[in-house]
Image (cartoon, rainbow, N blue to C red; front, side):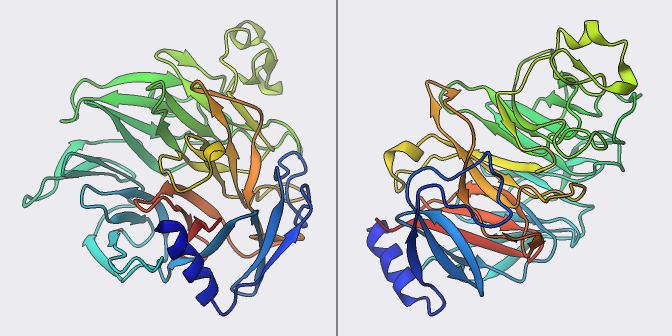
Amino acid sequence: MRIRRAKRLVAALPFAWLTAVGACSATAGDDADQQADGESIQQSLLGHTMVLPKGFAINVFAQNLGGLRFMTVGPDGAIYASRMSAGLIVKMTDANHDGTADGTVTVQSGLNNPHGIAFRGDTMYVAEEGRVVRFPPGGGAETIVSNIPQGGHNTRTIVFKGDTLFLSVGSSCNLCDESDPRRAAVTVYRPDGSGEQVYARGLRNSVGLAINPQTGELWATNNDRDNLGDDIPPDRVNILHKDGFYGWPNCYLPGKPNPEYASASGVCSNTIGPAVELTAHSAPLGLTFYSGTAFPSQYRGALFIAQHGSWNRSSKSGYVVSWVQVDNGKPSGGAKRFVSGWLQGQSNWGRPVDVLTAPDGSLLISDDDNGRIYRVAYQG
């Protein structure tokens, strides 16, 4: 049923045209080390050429969402999204199953840079810049974590694993020694905000968090330091372990001290390396393990990554959604392009932020440059 519905949707889009292209055909500006695998198609979207694997199509699910950032699926099956700069949490449904949101409803307002959203049962948790707040059904806001350090990398992301709440807080700087141990780290709490413990550190800016459903491990994107040139250091996805150290600010890879910390070779030898390396400065943000059944088998359980795109590279990188095959809970091979086209030459018209498996098995992609959510569906 989902496949037939996706076919009708693509056929109905007046701007959509599909053309098969070669197996490794790259859109101008795409990362050379993240070629698409298999045959690709081109599709026109809003006057721009998008590139996807053969059999997939993309459309706009929702728009006019200024400040859009992270998304999650609520217990009611609706899509919840943060509008960070607007201070809002909004809700979207697709009751008629036409692949577009029926409308947008504001469920919380007046928040301070809300970013991460997570549900535990029917209680919604929101990570603001300076606190984590929860909203029990029928009740008012309850602050469970306060006095989170503000400024610097100011997004705050949360995810639950059972009764454990993970909170990511980025660094205050490009490269420095932090005085607050919660900076450049992931910290854990009980659902009521008690029991604070630093879980993993040395993470300059881990914007995205996701639990691997096969292993129960926490995976996280990380944006590494600037000012070492176009190609160093790589951005990455890490598998986080309790008490693990991932290098920052001393090292950018195991055994690779930052020049400013040249004497830190001993520390660097104990640094945990990345599970997945990505192009430098491509800015991986949200990530998700595909949990649907509508995509072909090679994508089921795969890791999808939104790469927001570089701001300080002489040749731009990122502006794509990538995927990594996962076998037995571990990455199998490197990242490959899944959707590209937001970067045309050296000009970008969109910036992917987050990825989410929708209840119908499609993949949703948020874009904070345009305030849109895109929907990628498999049509066969």
